[in-house]
Image 1: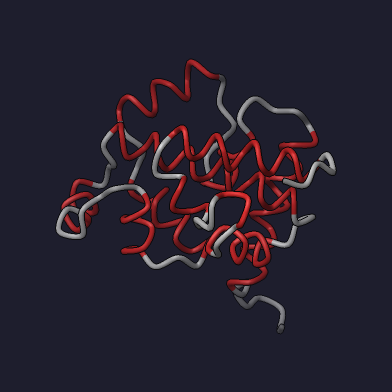
Image 2 (image 1 turned 30 degrees about the vertical axis):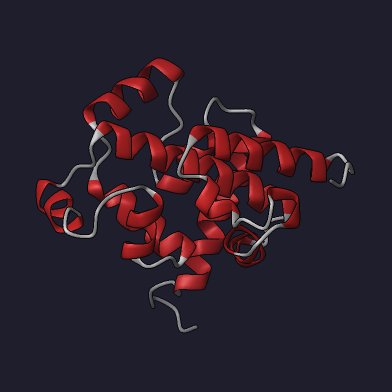
Amino acid sequence: MPKGSAMSAEQTRAAEVEAYLLAVQRSEGHPYMALLGMRTLDTQGLHEKVRRGLPFQVFQRFVRLTELSPHTLAAILLIPARTLPRRKAQRRLQPDESDRLLRLARIYGKAIELFESDSQAAMRWLRGPVVALGGAAPLALCQTEPGALEVEHLIGRFQHGVFS
């Protein structure tokens, strides 16, 4: 790549994943916030941001990072397709949508760790059916907290060599 040219999407993704892994290594409070392009916040600060609703640009960044389509991400976050343009115009997600996006970022981060920094392998796994989850795709389960916790527990079992 010539000097002065913009980073490719792949290079940008790699830098964002690296920022996340560095935050994990430093044991910062909420390292998955790095995946959303936000400073790692203390729990109270994060709580307040979610209560106000995250900026829509965080949604857009996550689309770019994961290579999910905006409509696919909206469906995972339970945002109706007809509502998505309104959120973009308002430049803000609702608190419940923000909460689900944080949950998904947390799971995506855990999957990146599981696949040793390979974000594309992490997304393939998150999108595909997983026998240990009853054949469900981890992304689909991330629509609810109980489902996301099950995915997170499964990732933890894999990381510790306990194969379900």
